[in-house]
Length: 176
Image (tube, rainbow, N blue to C red; front, side):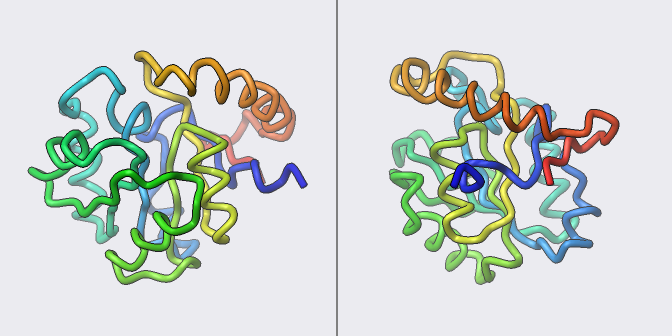
């Protein structure tokens, strides 16, 4: 039952995701969470490193879509210049937003990975659709109040179980 909360991969930062390994698994699209996954929640622009990572993934042939519970204005201000499609006010973990992201990219579930920093939104939602899920350690910065007070304490319990399964010899921190 708890397996629906477990990511397929757990990495310390988005930069640790190996695009060649994803390609070998048939993954060609990434549905990316925004806040604390690719930009700190309290920042209004991507770091140079994240911009380069996003552009590099596009150059390697990956399709990208930001799926965020955040507002239209914030998401479009950040991703608009990169011409990355987005789904806003996603109400994750509900399936509709993830399905909409896949529809925008023209991909199937078996070709899609969800990348996010929250178990109860990103990972749960992706797993409910059978997508490949990648949990990243949240970027430094402040969390939304509900995330800080409710989600993060509950996530610690799940992460403890995940950590017990992780092989720290593997640079990708693969869970399964």
